Length: 585
Image (cartoon, rainbow, N blue to C red; front, side, top):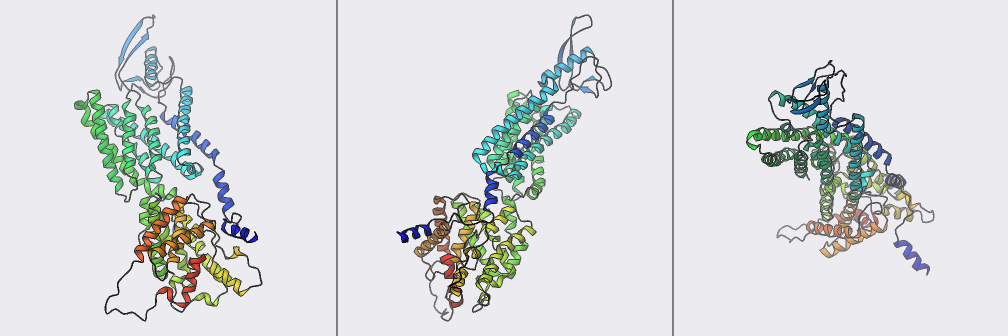
């Protein structure tokens, strides 16, 4: 019975192991910043209501106008004359109703009331409160959708602030652009609706799709279209126009690989706006009277949209620490300082990282994760080794091992230090935090079994703390970080195979993944057993391609050459890695 209990205890995950950042991460995950969300939603709604509320003064007879009051459209007004007779008057668009500093007459009061009626605005204070309440209701529905679709976002204060900021900026820029363009339209006697087609509303959805994801951009487009539709109360087609152009802009920057793709997205937005404008003008029967002006306005709006996104995207990437696909592609450039340093100082580590990048990318694709992020994270996961390259097996020469002259505990400290040093180097180069997290988490709290066993052999009587020979953690918090951890361990173990046949590769892959799972390294991320099966299949495919069979060419006898894993001073270390992790890192 005792042996059976010992076997069960050995196989079960070690749930009680200390993790330096487990409590911190768990508390942060469960303590959702509800106060931040609620206060940010209220502040955003108040600002948006102030921006969107029509600037129509609520004046009565005898009040003094603070500024010129101009009719926004042609009106027919009925009002009571001095002798209680009913009078009618017509006001043309752009006509001054009351000059600044003059008192409001009965006629002007009636015209202002009719203007307010057209805008649908009653008492301004009540109107402000009502509009705020409606915006908050829309925010609540958006929050419920995000909580269902992407619950982790509700605890990410930085991205919540980014969404609120983009919403505010989109509406404010649109309102400001409308004010400027209305002045231009008055100068050229253009219709106010024409100005609406030139507003760069789609820029907000495009930025959300680039910085976050398309689902959020879809909901964002819907909210912005509803809000900006208030600027054109007499035209129900404007919200539809804004929604369709925003969706097209967001669609064409999904998995955007180059910054020039933003320009192409602007071109597609212009094309969709042309179709929408033709449909709207056909419906109104004004295609041949104002269609050319409307199409020109749509082209201007698409051009402004692409320009705004191109100019502001680097700002949002830097300020909100967002790793877009464009940013990740830039980080893959071998001329990046950290990669170039790794090539010169630790070429073996660089080659190891390239292979891990291939494994991680294939695994991420297999489980529908961001394959580009997995590859870039793999490229940078071992940059800390460039500080002490000679202490890592892939950079050592034959018959030269620095660890032969060190105690196991000192060797363990040197090996684990590459994680901390790599994270610090990444922060100094201002790499995105998601890359820094992969560097910190790619070993989790795994055991450096080779030096642990060596220490036990040197001190058979003195009890050793296993924790002293473990990486500091934290364990992987995301699927991508877990994939890099698995790829790192599998690639290291695969180098110990003397005859890397597909069957032996498959057995080794399954063994390494099982060991990491039983060591409780994957309990903090969302990987499922199905994900692990797909990851193992992708690893097997890539490794089988790397270690494929080659024929012996006549006249090329290298009999005196040994394989890397055959060297006596290295083979024992790599075998230890296959069993429980060595000092390659």
